[in-house]
Length: 429
Image (cartoon, rainbow, N blue to C red; front, side, top):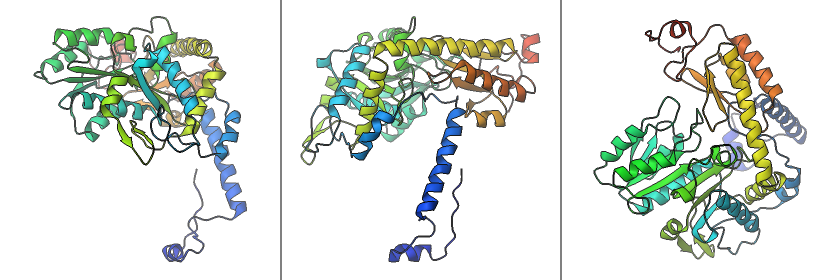
């Protein structure tokens, strides 16, 4: 999509004198045409979207009346400010829903609705640093990029932990990294659904390694769980609660609202133990509220959107139905790819199907996320078998020969790997 721009060498002079800015302003007819073209573009791109974990199955009609208001949940959600145009009541109901889902009592938790999963990670890691100022952040190499970005922003010590080929944390290397801390506190970020392969780290194995190394959560360790995608998937699939709850000992957890749940804007939820918030909070007279969040102004429409999405889902009933359907459809795509001789994988507790990287035309058409020799499709509630069939036809049509995925997957179907277990072949560029 490109916008026609009118060249005007006097642009900056026009800007200074407040007259028409030819590089920006349009007539009413031009504005209508630009917006119409943009809507057509969005419709087409939404139709051909499989690579990023967004549930595009939402109804925003009931939100439209509230776009007339500047709904701002500034400050702490539990400490109402002087600004009265807010949606705190809806926000707290959403937070209570997630607290019950992740097994923490109302009196013990605190949280808020964020702009996205990244903000949730930033809050969890910040609270970990506040608990242990000299702590070192440990996170798998398969973690979302926002995790180590937070460490750099906070100028924290940080160290990557190796990941298994599946994307799950390498627990032997985790033990080695703990031993190398030489007694410094450990701030650990675990994954409930890694970015590329949808892998889930085991809370039980992380806790066991911490215990063996002399670490105890709350004493010299802090655990944050990045559940951006699978935080709303694990509670509803068989075997999904292999940890990733506060009952298992984590300190904070974040999830995205625009992923499994489905909202028309990026948003999310972060829940933490109340004690961590109380350590960090500061009173702000200007707001007549408490500074406990990363952001100051917070989108009140997002809280309303998440509340409406949960109502539409009939709470856990609809989420259970959606999650099971996503698992079934992910297995359906995996089967089609493997039957066609394509190297492909699907982790347990995941709806992320990983396969040989396609050509550029296919990757761009379907907006696929690619890394190394692989790409993935994240099967969300808005993804149907018919859409997967259409994608599969495009993928096979553009596939010239198998791509070696030996460095990214356990099983590779390319000719050298399929015919000899002793041959090591380099992944395709």
